[in-house]
Length: 611
Image 1 (tube, rainbow, N blue to C red):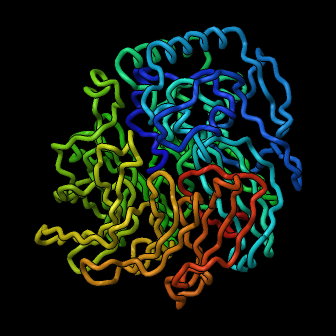
Image 2 (cartoon, rainbow, N blue to C red; image 1 turned 180 degrees about the vertical axis):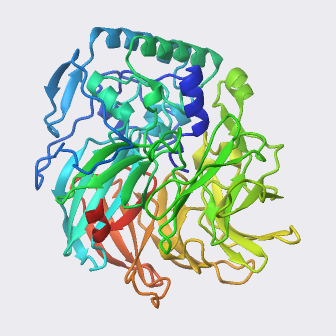
Image 3 (cartoon, rainbow, N blue to C red; image 1 turned 60 degrees about the horizontal axis):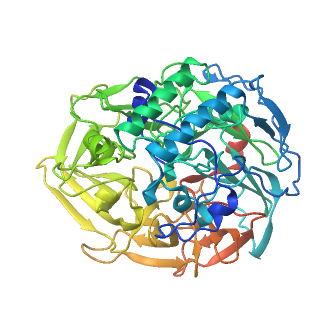
């Protein structure tokens, strides 16, 4: 799973104001010294400071706040600092620290009542003492800082930057908090001539900037604010009062941009599916700048998936959005210059579904209508999330032509028990389409108990003439965050690199799968376990010769951040994708820990210069 800041909830939040933010904070010591992710006996809750601050690091340059001069007519500028608050400097990164004004402090007291008496964080999935334990705890920003290569040497093809997104709450929560609720932070390791520089920066979303300048949380949390009717009503009323008082405007976006990144049309975007993309760039010294919220000249409305698919051959990108009101699904794409093409609303999806990812082939787009959807009764009577599972629903896959102008050729195929959160790849065969994706078993635990999830990677083949669907598992292990050589998107691929859940959301290693093997065979051909209490994240494949059409599919490297919980240190690992043990060819010691996160990508130097 990842930070799928659901479009369901973003629409509800903006229109009905039925959520609430968590105010105040836990001291960092109360978070980082807790038991493991789902320990049953949490330490007592102690309220202290709200701002995350860490020891100052020596940086190669001072952090910059300058903005690019590149024109971007459809990129919304960030709001200015509020003038009514008292400010001071943070010693950690020269960032402004704001003391909340009186109205904000008054609203925080009311929010504190909700968090302590109406809706305290009783369930482990929303208790910050569990959710933010170990290396899930947030960190402060880090300006560009040189790293030490402690093993091997960095390959010459790693000329660019590996950037990974993930949740990192600006204020440590006191009330309910879900793993998906944190503000987006980008962790970039810029590599040039065998040297590496790490930088960690928040995506300067409207929410982040507004709350930074106010000195306290203002916007309600999406995934943890709907815990029952009373809590939703109370937080909704408080949010309405904040809006009337001018503290925030939901029309400017409520997203976190904490899920993934995408590069297309010579732009780099930080993504979260409850909002528009945020354009970002890397400076020449490795710093990260947020350019603003991007609506593609007014053509992109409300939100977009955090998993667009970029075809490296054509330069096009394909995407969608989904929501709680018809059309529940809308498909669209961007041309090679990043210009958005017209929407294709899909009205044949007759009820809202949790559509986090999709597949794309050379001819079709493939959508999964799964058993996770809106569950208002559980919210009202069970005190749970409005997004939940429906065991009576039969999952299905929808196939639509890649360049469809409308949904007239959309076809749906029932695939019982097939619940897809992430798609790995899809390709065309004669009169058929094949999809690779992890199937989430025990789907009812998807949001509440990720440690009970088992993701079984399957190869699904749909015969478009007969309608017959065949399914074959390719590994029995608990695998998610599967990736391929990006050049094989939409084409028949042989190799997949996937993260091992131990259990989710912690990742104990990576495997290489050969999906060309026969039916019902274990397809694991290589693997690497990181070591005792060492956990990583989503792997990413970087080709050794990306411009060589004759290169072997697996000729390249697998990269990931890995954290050693016993030593308290993080590394950047580079593994040989062709070796049977995914041998480490380079290890970079990072100047401070990188928290566990979600999705990332590698952007080559020539593309970074075009941003």
